[in-house]
Image 1 (tube, protein in one colour):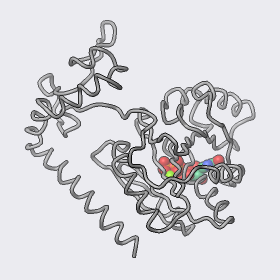
Image 2 (tube, helix red, strand yellow; image 1 turned 135 degrees about the vertical axis):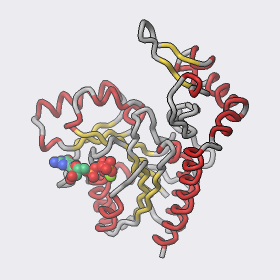
Image 3 (spheres, helix red, strand yellow; image 1 turned 180 degrees about the vertical axis):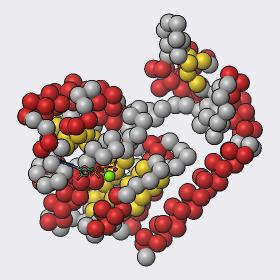
Image 4 (cartoon, protein in one colour; image 1 turned 120 degrees about the vertical axis):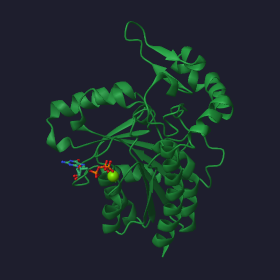
Length: 297
Ligand SMILES: Nc1nc2c(ncn2[C@@H]2O[C@H](COP(=O)(O)OP(=O)(O)OP(=O)(O)O)[C@@H](O)[C@H]2O)c(=O)[nH]1
Ligand SMILES: [Mg+2]
């Protein structure tokens, strides 16, 4: 089984290039399944189904979509293995730009479009920065100069990745991408695999469904802007800066999660809104199971 993670901003052309690339791979006799991860809604099932591509959709709803991705990727791989696909391609949107679904030793693709603006590559973060291949779409509706400037901006953010211009409508360029995908190594499991970048580390009352605003509601890991000067953080970990949340401080944060702060959060979950959140999560799990069964049939 070859796994490929495709991520990129909404409407950048992910589904279009995946479909075109699958058409190329199918001509060589490969079978491919797709799992789409999104937050609130995804219309991609219809697009993939129209091309007879097996597709599963996971909606994170009340949860961070990329945390949701990591929690479900191993199961997605199992789904694909059971069907003996040669490839599993995941599509996700990286909605907050801080996340990245890319995994070490798994081919990582970022799709970004020429129309998104020259400053967008800098805003996107690890999803683009740590991709092996960056696909730039919609080159057909900008000038040569714009294509070059945009590609240059992408290169500044990701100096090592391969940049390929693909037309998502005609599929021009997807033949080359299919060839690169073929070369990716086969994996059996993701147990023990490592993400290329940390997920955003936050556990605050709002993560747990709080809706009221106020100092007394700011429980857990939160960050405050000092409007009179430098950016300031609230809470011990964050006082030491964001970088630290990636390492030692994050661990500390995790420990806190298990302790005092979490207890406070849990107490809050007893409120009405939080019950709603919990129900949603349970509902999603059920939906997941039901959808899968339905799809399998
Ligand atoms: N002109 C042009 N349009 C494109 C190109 N690639 C994609 N599109 C169009 O862009 C729109 C969005 O494409 P999708 O492939 O659905 O984008 P996506 O990234 O999968 O979108 P989400 O899954 O909703 O985040 C569609 O109308 C595509 O036809 C391209 O290279 N050129
Ligand atoms: Mg899509």
